[in-house]
Image 1 (cartoon, rainbow, N blue to C red):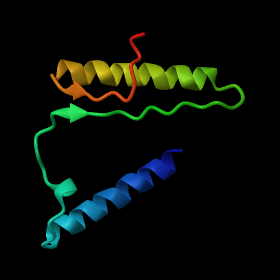
Image 2 (image 1 turned 90 degrees about the horizontal axis):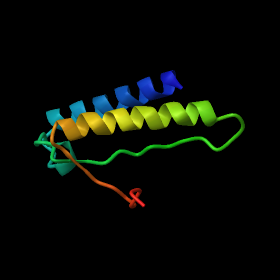
Image 3 (image 1 turned 90 degrees about the vertical axis):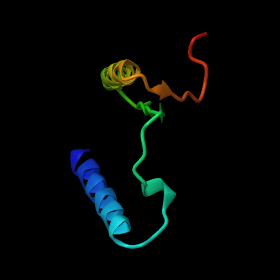
Image 4 (image 1 turned 180 degrees about the vertical axis):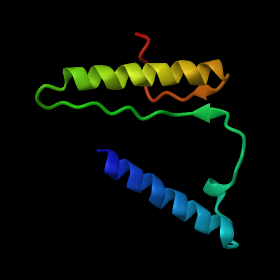
Length: 82
């Protein structure tokens, strides 16, 4: 839920801030231009999850459209065009 995601963002932010302050060579924390983006979309498979899954897929489709409009390349793990 929301409290989990908010806490996770806070923890990751604090870790990143600490890495920026300390003199550590951590390639994943360096600021660089974004060229490629990968989205991980997770849906449910229990009970009455159809509405939930539909909302997740629609949000993912909107985000993909936004990223394409910015000219970013989307990395795909499988071919969903077939």
